Length: 357
Image 1 (cartoon, rainbow, N blue to C red):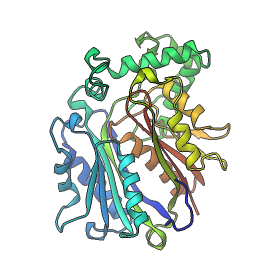
Image 2 (cartoon, one colour):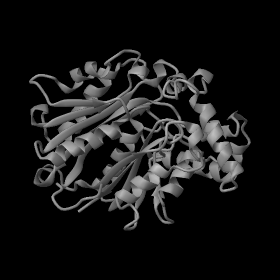
Image 3 (cartoon, helix red, strand yellow):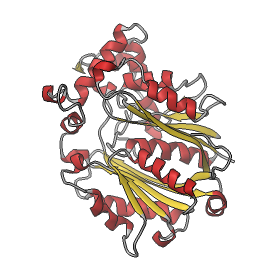
C-alpha cells in the first residue's frame, strides 16, 4: 500500500540489530533486553512513551507454546502495554504496527523479531510448515526444497551456476563491513566457490544462507512525532505483502509473483532505488527476487551481505528493513527497498519502500 490521501506519514526512527553464529550464554530475553533498550534509548523514549508493541517469532523454533510471552520481560510489561504478536518474521509484525499507526490511536510503536536456531534443527522446523497431507509426510527439509527450486531455475535456462556464484561472492564481499555478518570474505571468487562440492545439488554451502542467532528491534513514529525524535527519519512510502499458493505443485517455482505484486503496489518501480535489501535465503532465490522486484542496474543489492551472510529465522526480514532504514537515516541512501519472505520457496513476500526527507 502506497501513501495516499488520508494516510499518516510513518517512519523508522531507530533500529538495533545483533546476529551471531550461536548465542550460547544468553537466552532470548537477555538478547532482547539489550536490543530493545538500544532502540528506545537512541531516540530518548521509555516504554511508557511507546503506544504499541508488536513482535514476530516462532513457537516451533523456541520449542514451547506462546513462547513470545516470556520476551515481554525484555520490554517491560508493567505498566500494562498495548501488545500484539505474529507467528512470522518480525517484518510482518512491522506491517501490523504500521497499520496500527495509520488508525491514529498511537504515534509510536516498538517492533522486534528474534530467533535462536542454534538450539535445534532449522531444516526440520521449516519442514513443519509444509502441506500436512501430501508433502510433510515426505519430510523434505529446507535445503531439499531450495535445491529443487534451484534445479528448476537452472533447467529453465534463465540463469547459470556461475551467475549464482557471483551472487554469493557479492554477499561475501559486502558482508566484510557488517559487524553482524557471520560469513564474510574479501577474497572469495566465483571459481573458488564453484570448486566446492554441492550440499544439496546443485546448491553449495555458499549458496545457502548462513544460519545465525539474533534479533532486531525497530521504533516507528508518525508525522511530527517522528521529526521531533529523529534528525532524518526513514519514511515508509509504501508497504505491502502478498502470498502465493501453499501447495508447491500448483506454483511455478522459478517465479515469485507475490513479490512482483507487492513491489508494484508500493510503487517500487516509480523512481530509482539507491539500495535494495533482499531477503533471499539462497542465491537462486535472491536471483529470482531481483528479477521479480525489478531491481535495475545501478541499485546496490544487499550492501549488508543479506541473509546469505547471516540469516536469523523470524528476524531476517525485519533486519532487511532495519538495514535499509539505517542507510536512509545516515544519508547514504535517499530511496531504498526492503524485502522479507516467509514460507517454503518464497511463498509469501513483503516489500517496503523507504525514503529520506
